[in-house]
Every structure is written in structure tokens, then in C-alpha cells.
Image 1: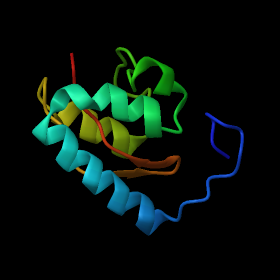
Image 2 (image 1 turned 90 degrees about the horizontal axis):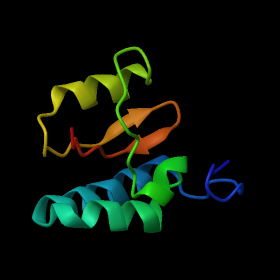
Image 3 (image 1 turned 135 degrees about the vertical axis):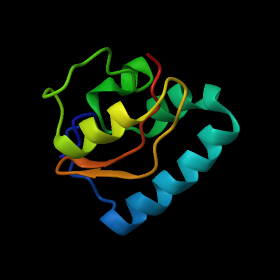
Image 4 (image 1 turned 180 degrees about the vertical axis):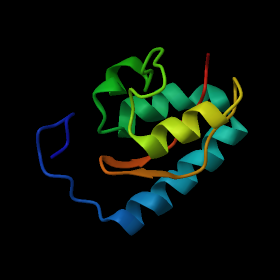
Length: 94
């Protein structure tokens, strides 16, 4: 189920990865697009905040998400991050 729409997610994992790879390319070319793309495409509850999850510490997120997040420097954009809740791209802002 998509937390955003309450409807089942209809995209398969391979399609989601391809889509995220395209998003990563777009955001690396123009980091200012991250929030807009998140608002338009994210199924996470943070979509209304442009994907902003706020500050979080270690142990608060799923391990792969946490590892990717804390490996980034401020302003960096992750590669594809695969967790039990879906496929993600992360931009560290703080």
C-alpha cells in the first residue's frame, strides 16, 4: 500500500529501480529538483514536505537507509537504496 494514496503500489521493483536511477540523474544535474520530484512521485508520507524527513539519529531508520544516509556528506545524493519499505534516493541536506 502506498502511504500517500492508500492504494496498492502498482510498479514492480525493477521498474522502480529504473525510475529512481532516472531521478538520481535529474537531481544530480539540478539538486533543486529534488523536492519537486518528491512531491510529484514519492509514496512516502514526506512527499508533502518535498521528501524532507527532518533530522534523525542512528537507530531510527531501516539499516540500509541509515547506512546510506550517514555515508553522505551534506549536499550529496545517494544511489539506489533498497529497504523493506521500498526503493529510495536520499539527498542529505543537514
